[in-house]
Amino acid sequence: MKVHADLTVVRQARWYEYAVRFLFGGLISAAAGLIAMKFGPAIGGLFLAFPAIFPASATLVEKHEIERKARLGLNGKKRAAQAVSVAAAGASIGTIGLAIFALLVWKTLPAHTPWLVLFGATLVWMALSLLLWQIRKHFAHYRRRSHGR
Image (cartoon, rainbow, N blue to C red; front, side, top):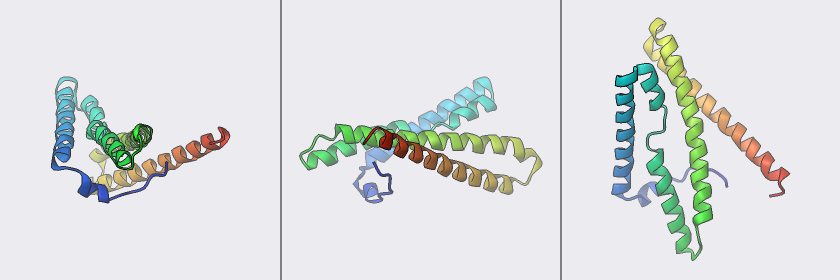
């Protein structure tokens, strides 16, 4: 499965699907806030690295893939599972990058200029996430070739 950006899906999504994503994101952020109140900001911050809208997004990706294949008269369950798998891999990689971002900000903010720390941590987050995605892509390609697919 080749990953690409398809902005046409923004128009295909219904308003309530965005509302569900917003609700999930808010609930997960609120849960992280409650955890921070109970166990401190260092522990609570770890939970903010969770991709807050992923649970809602995964179900919507699955639903849209199945609907798209059904319009063609096909069973889209396998394709939907692949699409959700790729989305989960991306969310996991982004979460690792975001955790490193948080660690960098936490450790460097007290001693450095805030805007510079945030800018540098953002660059590290993006670079690390892209690097990890390329590594994942390389190993996925290698695995497909070694299994004859």
